[in-house]
Image 1 (cartoon, one colour):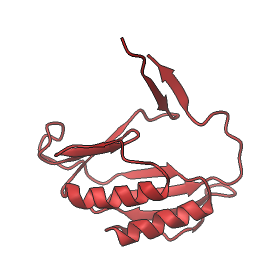
Image 2 (tube, rainbow, N blue to C red):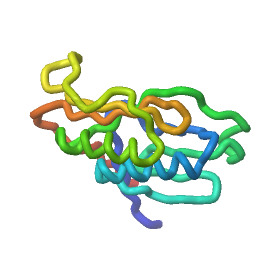
Image 3 (cartoon, rainbow, N blue to C red):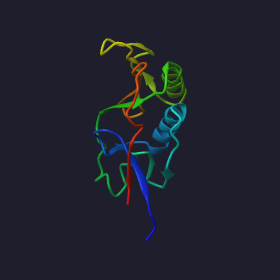
Length: 142
């Protein structure tokens, strides 16, 4: 048996979005995730994925014929410049502005930008300011 290794974050194991136009969503997510240095993990006829985000078409087996609706997802960014690159890439690839890059009042150093993806989901990139992480992710080997 082959050994596999996965990395997990804090609370969310994975997220699936069901979208009305898979090609438009792929253009958007490939651009904004690329700006965050997160590559697509795979692509099929009716879905694509990156890390633990799965995006599928309405006619995919997992979708049950309906889009998932409006959600808010926040991706962590390495620094302020990455937040700005995320916002710029999203605007050039089908996203709509929902909050330009800037400081937010949530806590000191919270720097974020918000975009609406092609289905109206509120997608954020956030840099939490200078901080020390205990670990980049949780590593699970099986």
